[in-house]
Length: 279
Image 1: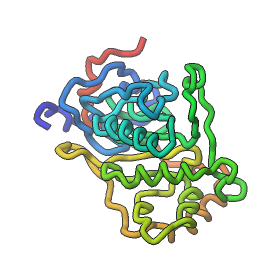
Image 2 (image 1 turned 180 degrees about the vertical axis):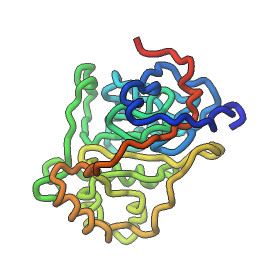
Image 3 (image 1 turned 90 degrees about the vertical axis):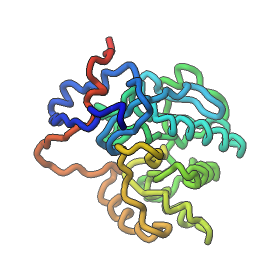
């Protein structure tokens, strides 16, 4: 990435300092350079980001006041293409939640990933009619999981949800899709012989009301780090382990272990130097 030689610089910043002042959260403008996802999904930044239009064919952006509707051009194209494809199948208005901030980087809350403009949360709430401004700013989520009984909620789970997951997983740009293990179980229960797309559906904590789509590093982004390849197969055999974990954790959130604060290096800090900050 010749236009960003300083991107390889590292700044050791403690979690404590980040809690006091997080420069990534202060950015109101993108970093004007050749588009580049720099670093890893949970430790990086984003140059040349694009803002997703808040309303497009087949989608609306929710909670835009968070300023998390930016992404690598690859992600912007994916969301647009994906929404149009779903609309052609009768799913008329998907709700796009968190993507990345204008220059990527670490959020103060909500995610450890979404840092390089290649992640997007898409809600499982289905709405044919457009939401109005107030509803977009403060929407309610719809879980498709019966957390008490560890089964799918038949009152909220729809065939359209499977379509949403399948269409995304079959897109070559998509690396992984994180969803609740109970949702993966439902898909495995309905599995057919040619459902190879299930490999990309990865069980994870939470994610009972949205799907988290992650793209592969774009070609030519040499500073972008892909995750390790997913093991071959549909992955349905690992769900018994997940079911046991969920039985132990009623909140469905990943248990946190007490451990000392560590210094976390952040790549490409020049992207937040001399930036215009929020007033």
